[in-house]
Image (cartoon, rainbow, N blue to C red):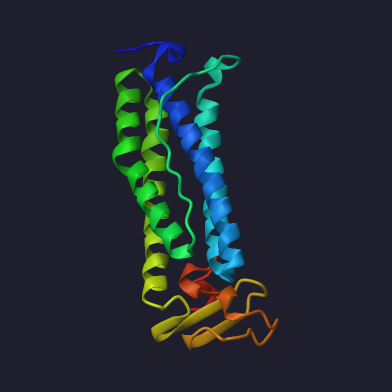
Length: 204
């Protein structure tokens, strides 16, 4: 079945997805602020990093709606109110929401787009669904570390990067203070999770 985008369920799904991604971006920006207040700048950085990616997703869905430019698209939808007092709660709620987009929400949107004759839009839903799973995995991993009191401690020696100055420390625990810039432990992240980190940074 092939229909005009302006008369399709796919257009409504694009608007639902655009609204969802836009709200996720704001929720993660708010979460980043709370993490900063709780002296967890590394989690602030992760939430802000993810917020920027949600903005990119929103733009992709928004651009798919160009045939409807100048119109108002009315949709129904449910969106989470993720107000919480702790970083751990915010991580767990973000994990849940990302997994929900991964399955069942975006696969269902992709199937509807395929059935209505919009393979490119279906591909966007499918590819972004996989990214949302990655987001959920990351939030869940960090939540696990926080719950186990291992956000800054490891069972085995590993690399830790200061997000302020880039200093890399090797050990089972991130330094209480960065020896280079004197920023507190909350700025350290496991090197494996650091932006552009990993073995290449250590010359391996």
